[in-house]
Length: 340
Image 1 (tube, rainbow, N blue to C red):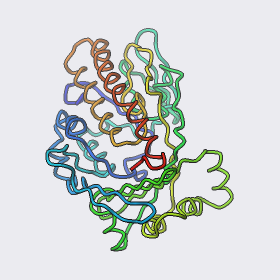
Image 2 (spheres, one colour):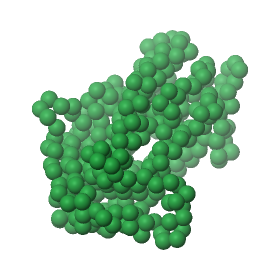
Image 3 (spheres, helix red, strand yellow):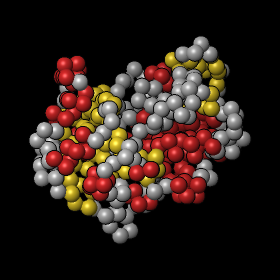
C-alpha cells in the first residue's frame, strides 16, 4: 500500500529467503479485518482465487470418548473467513512488491532513536540503515518495541507442540475433515488443521510449567512427553499425535491487556509487536488491519507525524477492546469442563 502510494519503502526481514522455513499452520482471514486489508492493497481477488473456502468447517472432539461432532460452516449469515496457508499468503504479498523491496537476512538487533532526524537500525549482519519512519512489525520479541517500552511478553503457562502429518491415513483425514478439529481436555488440548495438499498440522497444547517441561524433555524426549501427556485420551485422537513428524515446541506468551508504549516521532508498532495475545484466531487479522491503517494514514496525510499518531490511536483502541477477552478465553480453554 505504501509503495502504491508513492513512498520509498524497505522491508528488513531476518530470514534469509521466503523459503527458509515452513510458516506454520493455516490462517483464516476474516471479512471484516484481514480481507479488508487485502482489499485496500488490491489483493483480495488474488487471495480468493487461492483460499480454501471449504476450510471454514469446524469440528469438536470429546477427549475421552473420541466422538467427533461436525460443526459445519457456521450459522447462516455468519462471517466469511476462508483459510490460506501462511506460506501462500506470504508469497501473495511478496509477489506484489517490486524486486529489492525486501532486504533478506537483516535481523534487527537494535533501534537507536534519534532526537531529531532519521532513526538508526542495526542488524546482526553488521549492516546499519537509517529511516525517517520505522514501523515495527517484528513480532513478539520486537526490537522496535524495546526502544519504546521496557515491557516484555509474559508466559501464559501454555505450550504448543506443533507436529505435521504429510500423508494422513484415510481415517485420520476423515476425522479432521476439510477444516479444523478442536478438542479440550482441561490441562491438555488438541487442535488439528487441514492445510493445502491434504497435509495436517497438529498442535498438542499443554498447561505445564516451563521448568517441568525442560526436565521431562531432557529425561525422556519431546515425543514421549507429548504422548504420555495424552495417555488418558481416546485412541483415535492419540493416533493424530502418533502420526506426526517430530514436534516443535512453541511456548505461548502475551503482552498485558493494558499495554501501551510511549509515543515517539517517526516510530510505531503493529501486529504482535503492538499487542501480542494468545492464538485465539484474531492475531493475523489484526496485524494486517493494523498495517493497512498505518499505510492509509501515511498515504492520506502530508504530515507523517500526525498520520502515525492517528493510526496508532486506532491500533491501540482496537487491541484494547479485544485483548482482555482473548486472554480470558484462552485461559478458559485449559480449565476443566469449561474449554469446550
